[in-house]
Image 1 (cartoon, helix red, strand yellow):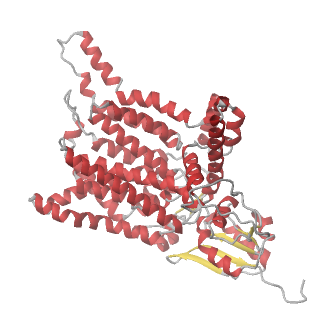
Image 2 (tube, rainbow, N blue to C red):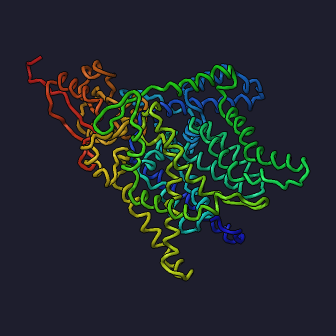
Image 3 (tube, rainbow, N blue to C red):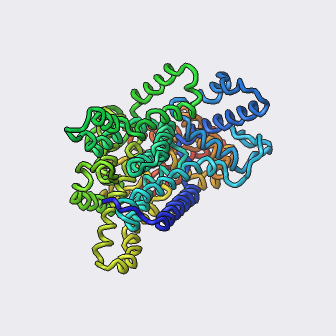
Length: 589
C-alpha cells in the first residue's frame, strides 16, 4: 500500500507541511496550556528541572575555567541529580534548560510576601512565564509527533489521509491534556512515535542515516520514560517478519551466500544502531548512572516493578490494588476517545486489512516495502495489552497506554484516504473535495478538545453520556490536583490576607508555580497535610474523587458547617469545592 517514489518537489512540499504541523501544534499547545492548572507531578518535576539546569550551568562554568574534572565530579552530579532519580532525566533537563533561558524573572522583594523557591539569580530572555517555559519542550515534542504521523501516513495512503491522521493524533482530549504538561507521558508517546517513524524509514531506504537516527531516538526515548523498554521487541518481530524472505535462498547457492543472507536477516542496521547507540545515548543523558551504575539502575527498575498502586474509580468501585479488571483499558479507551476517531479507526483497519497480502507476504529481496499496516496495527494494540495485565499498576488511567493514540489516528487516516477516493473517480475532483472531508473528520475531535479544556481528565465521550453520564457510571473524574487552578480567582478575591488554606491534593511546588506566574496570591499559605492541615486552616478545598470522601467529612467536622463557599464544576460535574471556616460572633471565643 506504500506509494511509489515521489518527485523531489513533492517531497519538499511534504517536509514543509510536516514542519508547519509541528509549529502550529506546538503553538496551539503553548497557548492552550496558559489556562491549564499545574498538576501535582509537575510540581516535583519543576523542582527537579531547576536542579538539572543548575547542574549544566555549573558544569559549563567550570569547563569554561578548564576544570575538566567537573565531568567526573560525583559530588556535583549527585547534588543535582539525586532528587527524583526514580525517573529518567531527559524531559526534566529540557524543562529546566527551557526555563533557564526563556522565563521572565518575577522575584518580589516586598516584605510580607511568602518566600518562593524560584529566586532571581540570573539573566534570561524573558519571553515566557516560568510555567510556560517549563512546559514548552513538551509542546515541541508533541508537535514533532504530529509531523511524524503525517510523514508515516503520507507514504502509506496519501496526503489527505495523512493530514487527517496527524490532526486526530493530537485532537484526543486526554492526549491534548497530557501534551500541555511538564510531565513524561505525552513526551514518551512522541519519542516512541518518532523512533517508529525512523525505524520505518530505515526499512524503506538503504540510507544508514535513518538507522542511526532510530538508534539515537531510542536512547532519548529510554531517557524519557521506561515505556521505551517495550519498543524493541515490537520492532524486532516486525522486522523479522517483514524480511523473512531472506531465509529463503536458492538450494544451489554456495554456503557462504546462505550465511550472508542469514546474517543480513538477523543483524539489520537499525537493530545494531538501537542496540549500540540507544544505551550509549541513554547513559550520556543520565549522569546519575555514571557512578555505581548497576546498583542505581537496579533501583530504578525495582521502583517501577514494585510501583505503588494508587486509587482509581471504575464503574463505581475504587481500586487500589490488583487484580484490576481486564476490561478497564478497552472500556476507558472506548469512553474517552472521540467517537468519530474510533469509528474511523475501525473502518481504516478493515479497509487496510483487505489489502494485507501486499504487506504481510514476503517482500522479494532487493525491494523495499513500507510495512506500515502490520506495524501500525501492532503499535495500536501493544500499549493496551501491556496495561491490560491484571497485575499492572493502574494509577493514571489512559496516560499509560497513550502511545497507542497516534497509531489509532493512522488507522483512522487510512479510512479518510479511502473516503476521498470514493467521492469521485476523477483525481481533480478528489483534490477539490479532500479538504472538506478532512475537515469533517477532524471537527468532532476538535470540538471535544474545546469542550473539555482545561479539564481534559474529566472528559468522557457521548458513549458515556459525557462527564455527567460518566459520573453516574462511577468513573474517575480527575487526578493530580490540577483543577485547583479553577478556584484560584475565588480564593484571590475572597480570602483575607495571609489566610492558611488546606489545598488537599495539590502539592506546594505546584502552588508555588501558580503564585510565581500570578494565578494565586502570594500571601496565601498552605496549612499542611491530612487532618492536622484541615484543622489548622481557615479555608479548605476538597477535590472530588471517590477515595477522597473522608476529607470532606473532616472539613465539616473541623469547620462546623457543611455549606460550601464555592463549587467548581465542569459541564455540570463538581470537581472542586471550597469551604471557609465561619467567623465566630463577637465575644464568642
